Length: 194
Image 1: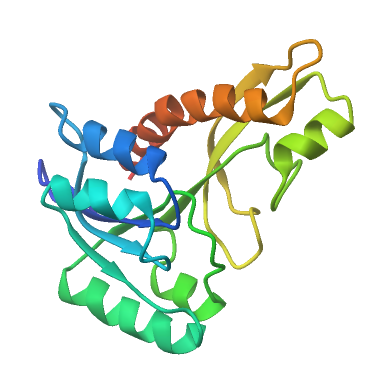
Image 2: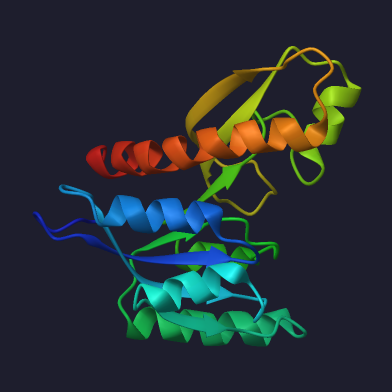
């Protein structure tokens, strides 16, 4: 598991593909008193990801990797993470699936946030599927990453009650707000249990 040496913060890398709204909330969290993480490196597979511009504004190092050959991308990423002594990876809307080999190198040190109450609704289009199936509740989950999609050990979840005639856009917006609260809480819990 992750070792946090005394009051030292965990050197953290956040992986993104898009707007980076969870990244923004994690950066805010990392600056709060007593936060266990220090975000030192933001990685993306998309050079147009809005989250990259935000990270640069906050003077956090960023790097984009082409995933045309994902095995080569992963070798480069691993090398760069080792060089920076990163000891926690937070996936925040990262739209690439990491290989078993990559996950093995960071076993127990990669976490992800997913917009459903896992184990239900793994993968994409969660909100549409939740509404289509007339679920009463949805929510979000922070979990450890293993080699199976959205199947790692659950760290924390937040339940959200569906509203009458709610569409997927409105539901996504409400759940995203909860994600911003849940992700930092789950990181605190994970680190305190080490």
